[in-house]
Length: 462
Image (tube, rainbow, N blue to C red; front, side, top):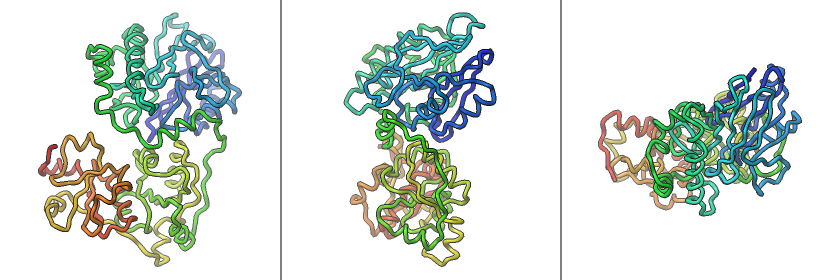
């Protein structure tokens, strides 16, 4: 009997799968995340032996758990053909089959997102010998396709052309009834604008996916796909390199809690990263001087990847030990392993020890509108270029938050600097950087662009 289980990982918006045959008691895991206990537990509860661990491609957005899972289970590790791998695995070509009792996975070479990318057709002999499902990895998503620009070697157009061929000549001939199971859902930066559905059908994508519903030549497709492609997150290059090397098998561990006085000494050292994971409003009210605010919300893992240096130690400040532990797991999933400690009892112990507090001001959008033309105010839009192209607060300067630290010289440190983004989340990151860098008066705008539009305030179009 077919076993089919999907694992969704918040923050990464990543999807992995356990598939197999319960009668034969055998299964495969496709694209496992780094913390692999969930797959071991699922297999144990169902009485299954994991025979294969499969990577659809060399991932760029998270640290793969494939090597660790294969080592712990004795499973055969499988991936596409690439000279980049620095560890042992079975490299497969299109047409090869992986037998799982009455269930079979048929390999399809599907380059475009990456050169070595494979997809997997799922066949259950109880439902005939034709495949009924397709694991697409990062090739095809709901309402989107995988980005072809992550190699960073000028091969974008070549890879986009290969993606076109995979979609048109590999996927679509399979038929509209075939179910589609991608590696990512909405929120991942592995596509331009991935849809909300975590599964679909090829027929549905033909109707609603802009990559498929419009008939384009190969050149037209390549031009369309690459136009307006957002900058890939900074940590993608690092993770792509990490995922071809021999993996560390160590799991995440909770570092020691630190008393406020000890934490203060560490926070004053220039080579550390103090990360406050509390809400933007709590951070604004009072925080450890020098801390950067990356709030523990669904966006945390992506912006931690953008903003934090994997080569510098991290110290955390949270509302609770549970929040700190969750942040550590999220950081572990993207290879930010050097978490040395956290502030004991958070800001409660800090304030009770009468230690210094920094604050970030908070303006409503109405206050921002009333004061944006004051001579001593500079308004800073920290959204991405594509967002700014659709309108901004009149007179606002633009610096994408990921590049703010490199462009501080474009701002006047003596003016009141008011940051805004889409919701206030990235604006708080930016405000914390400005505060850390000695800007005189820094203000965040909770609600930001969402609230600005809701209030019907004026918009400047580029």
